[in-house]
Length: 118
Image 1 (cartoon, helix red, strand yellow):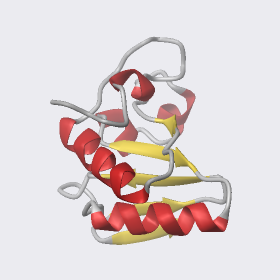
Image 2 (image 1 turned 135 degrees about the vertical axis):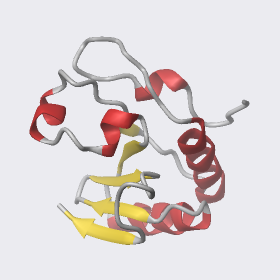
Image 3 (image 1 turned 60 degrees about the vertical axis):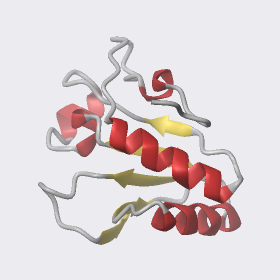
Image 4 (image 1 turned 120 degrees about the vertical axis):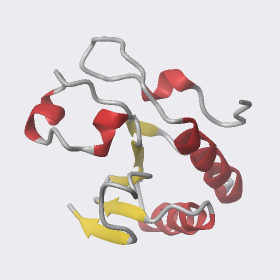
């Protein structure tokens, strides 16, 4: 699989364990969205192992399955461009925060389509 805008290492768990689990489908969809948006997508959180503090708070998170990413977002214009691109790339699950956009492809275990606020 060839990606134009991402490396698997961007999705490595940030707890220090060094584990990287990420779905090829997630990577391809994010790459498609990034190509459409024509602005950088910085991954602030990808995979989270079972020992990651956020996984302990939310053990059913799509991050623990390698099916989710949080993308840094610094202003409302970037958020609009990113959301347009993510919808174009067929994402259906979004969590919006003032500093990031959560997307996941966990559509078989969780409600879809859905948008929630943090």
